[in-house]
Image (tube, rainbow, N blue to C red; front, side, top):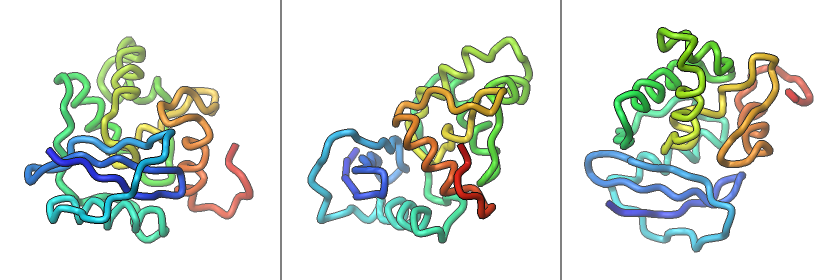
Length: 157
């Protein structure tokens, strides 16, 4: 596994992966030195993330290898089905998983998402439309949702 750091509009992102795929992407609250050298196996991830922030990409194609339980993997897979520019509630997510009673477990798995932006946990909101917990901070969640919102609204929240 190799870890690199790139600059994004929301701070420094840490990307970890190897030839088998990217296992983690996270946003840091501390400054890190930006990586000058990027291994070939992480180049596509860096390129696609930059395109996302430049409004030139709405989905990702690089290989993922997130590590988690079978249930977490199921939740993360379902999160990837949320269309760009759309949101779902935690209750909607639980229902898509087949059981509204797993709402807390689904929310917990959502919070353990190891692939920031790529597995779009930021697209999950409260059933009343409110922004709710986000590991990267609610201000980043708001920014991401507004970035992805295709309408010309002044602000989403």
